[in-house]
Length: 120
Image 1 (tube, rainbow, N blue to C red):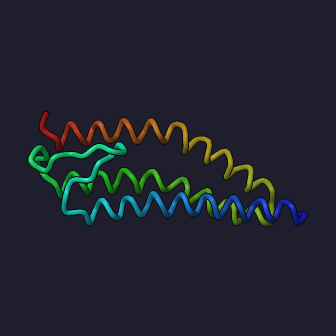
Image 2: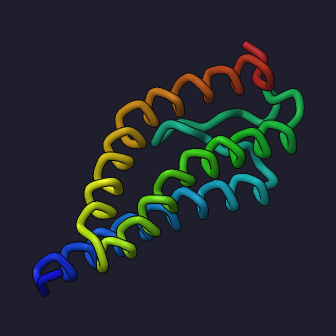
């Protein structure tokens, strides 16, 4: 494999790893939070409307950690891309699938969490 492909694979692995760490970190923060975590930027969920704050935060944590999984897998594939370009291509395909449908998963899952834990 040529030097250009190796550099590209390393950059891809770093970017995927940073995303994976960010989403895992959000999940970890959500699980440890004492107040209800919010999903949308700039919004808050009043604690008095949440039936079970620990359960609500735990559900959010699981959601974010599930979203992080394909990014962790893409990180590994990106690192394997140092030896074969096919792994780099597989990582790119995985990211495409993780990003677009993954955003719809986040929205769908959060709405289900709201229905379960937040009073109207």
